[in-house]
Image 1 (spheres, rainbow, N blue to C red):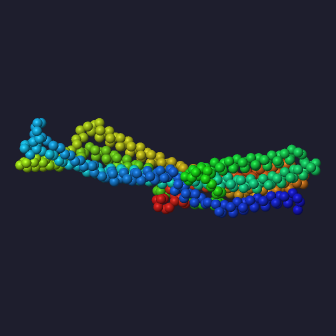
Image 2: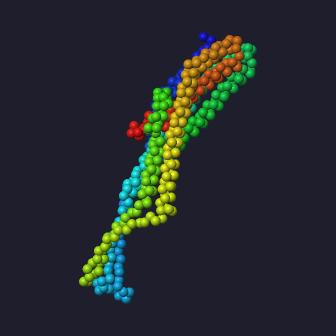
Image 3: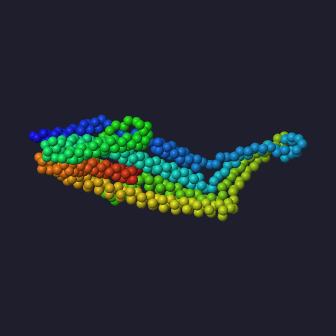
Length: 427
């Protein structure tokens, strides 16, 4: 075996060793599921939304409750000059209590409106949870890609070292030029620059991922574990149907529309008066008997032209708004699913092209070019160009892998399904 072939074999073994060590190191690191569970518990937006849901749920019994009763007391005297209680039949202590009773159906409609608002907030919370899951997944995939690229660059950097040694050997024997040596060295230094840029990107991604999980931005994160290719077996129509049935974003708009329907009915009920019942006793003292009273009063909606009718028109406008908003959300969700579905399938096809064609062929072309160059029959430009093509294809393969995983994560968020959330939350 020639020294050059020995160095090439050594470089390939080094690249394989780096990959195996990285895989072994990943086995002890946090899994994506662990980070998602932590984000669902620690994300500040989710925590705030949970308390908002709690607040809306406590509005439901308030809406169904009767207005507070009123109590009153007073004294009536016969003259301004002396206290005449018990001496005059017109002097008395008065005690009364009143209760307003809303027109039939009003309390039920108010409760229905509050219930719809609470359910819409619950659906918004579920939407936020799925978005956080998708966000963590995307950042995790980006972090995985950075580490994968660093591993590839580390392995290929040793191959550029082999090319550099071949260029130096040719130059020292008079078969090559100094320009060939400089070309090989420049390519190696460009890899060092790319590695430094990737390390900087990794720090940024770690900070963003920590923020999404509710951690301090400087908290240690570790390396992401190896990702397996996620299957995507459902077709486009099945995914859209699933989204229309289970998407919490669509469900939130449906609940808003239901609440708007109840508000229209409530506005129409305001044309009918409420009844207030008042009961009281007048204590007259002395030889005078006590007096009792019972009074029923109603409010008269005589200003309906400026109050009740505009209220109905307002409620109808809100109702139309929520209906259009619901339809727009359905279209938006379907469009998002189509976009990400096409992206996932396109990435799958490109990955197969790289895996079965471009990468093996580029690897063979590089080995052939390097073999010719080491015997003085090739040129350095061809060797470095083919090695650069091989490197680019490997990096692009993993880039497409990550884009596919991110697209699937977004599809899960849109359809309301998730690998990480319990089944009861996906209903």
